[in-house]
Amino acid sequence: MNRESLEFDVVVVGAGPAGLSAACRVMQLAGETGKALRVCIVEKGAEVGAHIISGAVFEPTALNELFPDWRERGAPVTVAVEHDELHYLIGERRSFKVPDFLIPKPMRNEGNYVISLGRLCRWLAQQAEALGAEIFTGFAAADVLYDDAGAVAGVVTGDMGVAKDGSKKSNYQPGVELRAPYTIFAEGCRGHLGRRLMDRFELRREADPQHYGIGIKEIWRIDPSRHWPGRVVHTLGWPLDNQTEGGGFVYHDEDGLVSLGLIVALNYRNPFLNPFDEMQRWKQHPVVRQFLEGATRIGYGARAVNKGGWQSVPKLSFPGGVMAGCEAGFLNPVKIKGNHTAMKTGMLAAEAVFEALAAGGIPGLDESYRKSWVSKELFHGRNFGPALAKFGTFVGSAFIWMDQNIFGGRLPLTLHNRVPDDASLDRASDSHSIDYPKPDGVLSFDKLSSVYLSNTNHEEDQPCHLVLTDPAVPISRNWPLYDEPAQRYCPAAVYEIVEAPGQQARFQINAQNCVHCKVCDIKDPARNITWVPPEGGGGPNYVNM
Image 1 (cartoon, rainbow, N blue to C red):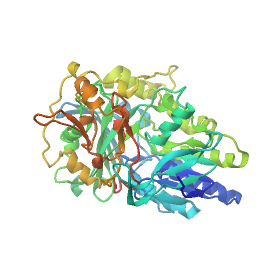
Image 2 (cartoon, rainbow, N blue to C red):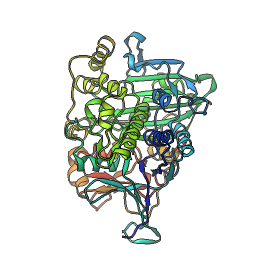
Image 3 (cartoon, rainbow, N blue to C red):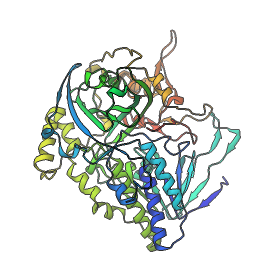
Image 4 (cartoon, rainbow, N blue to C red):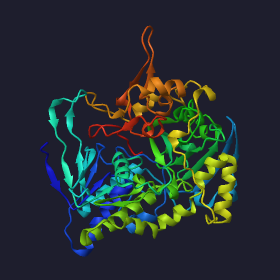
């Protein structure tokens, strides 16, 4: 196919904190050395921030390095953490407030800020453009380009105007080749191009499997008398059992807004568990409910987060490119933060690529990562996830306290969790069903009304972006063995089993609902679902998530 081809010095895939920081840093280095470079960022969301979702309590370490004068530049990082608390929830009504001395030191938030990551990314995009980078929004990087030697040579954006049956509609436009000597892949957690690159270049050969959670978030406008800007609340325990890792958060932002949510680790075992419904009943606990009396829910979203930590970081460099941010998995699970490490690894990627532009060869990102504070930070927190997986929440938390507060993350052992999340489910016949209460429409809601608040939209007449390797598997295998868990792990009601009298049951995919969380690509026990990008601009259109 004849496609338009644009030439750059560096292509960056993804306008999140890693990709935007990478573009800013490349342009800074070009300015410092007097070099004229052409850098582009390609972003599948309709605008920068449209697909960005995070808690978020933000550690400004990397931002201090990237833009030491960020306050003077007007960065939307203004609500300092004023109060920090952790509660262990014991059943539907009781709780135990954890004393400060029992909280692992890395979980404490002095010097951090409550932010909207979407707002911060839009600000970073302004800085990148001011430095000379070009940003193409509404274009999904659909595939990787390779040169004759097998090195990455850029990416190609997805075709527009393709009908559901694969035919070309009247508005058809072929994708565009974005070519460059080096490409920085920063798609975020479970990037579809990153997965292909890991397979092609065997980047995960020496790493543990990556592990994930699903984060489900809502934004509420609350009663001013209940609002405390800078208040940070975390919870452990109920509604999750001792063998299911996860926890909740309530972050008081500015203007009467509160961000709250629940993260559930995707190595959970019970196929009847529904992360969305767990989050809805979590809000009924008095520790959370106290903030929501008389409040209004105004935002909803969900996204997979990687939580494997130090043991799960793959090789980062390969011919023609590097991976940065959550694409590779730099979230620090013991801090419950990954935005600062995403930004820093984006900067490190930029520096490695800038050196390679002059010297040639494979960028040296792996070495610079190993020497960075990111590697040191992840190493000190390396036992967090494996401890919870091996010992459960209660004993695992005690181990983590000892590891962090007594030994400073320097215990002479490294725990591992080498069982991938998609292999963790028990059979439905060996599991207990969970009776979730019906939504009350005040504090708890259903999936479809929640998706509405995410402003999700897809062109309906296009190929389904949720690809089944074998369309028969959901009914023939997953349904009898696991009661088809896609019905429950999806937070957007994309998947359902449709049964009608006199007809065979069928597996229905409501792709228009998809909020691009990627959980189906991770948790399907048959590894039968592959998420690929829909037509550019489709998906959620988050506002300040």
